[in-house]
Length: 199
Length: 199
DNA sequence: CCGATTAACCGAACAGTGTTAGGTTAACCC
DNA sequence: GGGTTAACCTAACACTGTTCGGTTAATCGG
Image 1 (tube, protein in one colour):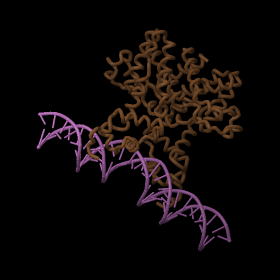
Image 2 (cartoon, rainbow over the protein chains, first blue to last red):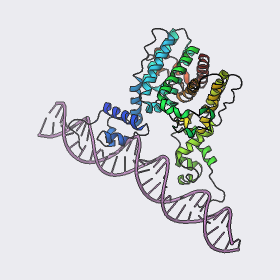
Image 3 (tube, rainbow over the protein chains, first blue to last red):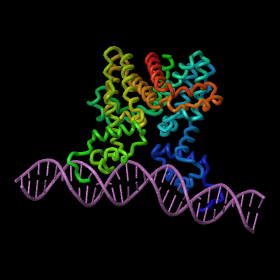
Image 4 (cartoon, rainbow over the protein chains, first blue to last red):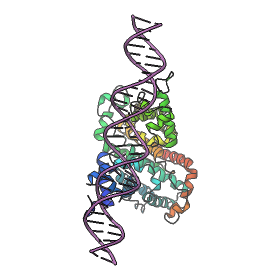
């Protein structure tokens, strides 16, 4: 195929289809050839619109992070922390498969830095020292990324035989998959509430 | 080379060299061919001792997790949680490059389940409901994995120009790399203390 | 002590990966 | 209408994990 009358590709379309593949097939399920195929194109053509696969993933990550809302610091800092963390988690849990990639280096992304900057400033305004503000922000990120990533309850088997006997206190762990999402959310809320209350 | 008089390979030696490569070159820096080369052997020979690369990584992960000590629950549950979390973090932060792999599915590993079982039982003994115990254990894992993984302070640039102007509250972020390890530890301790206190 | 078996390694290959170089043609601008 | 550029292609490179079949040394049974 030579140059088509209307372009088949655009950075936006590539990102959107790539994210759909990641959501559907996981992070390892995305390859440039598969992505190209779903776009009706050969793999090499992607490189006219995207510098590298890593850059593509970074762009997708940035677009996800840009949906995080840290504007809830008007009331008080405790409520602000909670709102910020919830917004982060909402953004991450809508695309859980890309979280491992995100977690590699959040500090380097402009979107992360912008939000971190706001968070840090709000904490300092609330009376915390710069060092304390940094550590509190870090702790909040621990909970957000830990909950989005480890996805605690997913990964448990649904077969009771895998637990009974060997792990005396986990004799009901096989029930976890059924309530995984709810339990994940509640665990996050508990951890978040305890952390903020304990500050 | 035919069969050597004394075997060059053993599962233990393979695991140990593989972990050394991961520590040195990162998780992506480990390939079966490179691993074989450092063992003085061809890649195919590894498969006489190791089922797959994934299995090899799982074995390494298990050996790391098996160093985690959750026996500190004799005194009270708060102190027990803190000791357990510290032991986890110590184990993980000595091999940070493998943490992303570990975080994929900690629930499936026998070593994780054993420690989770003890943790869960101790919390129930302390008076928490089963559901609460599960959520508290999950919250603890959030902080442990979040801190081990996101490695908050690593990833910041050492160049002030990257921050000044653009992020008004982060004008000293370039100092972070120099104190990264200390700050990471302090942030973890703060998050852990706040979480446990807030329960 | 000798023969069969097995254990341990190797070379070559397969299918897959990200990425690049060079070619072809349609669309666009002057 | 000719030149330039943009958008795609094919083919290839250097990798990846893994498997197959072969070669030889160690080991065990009689």
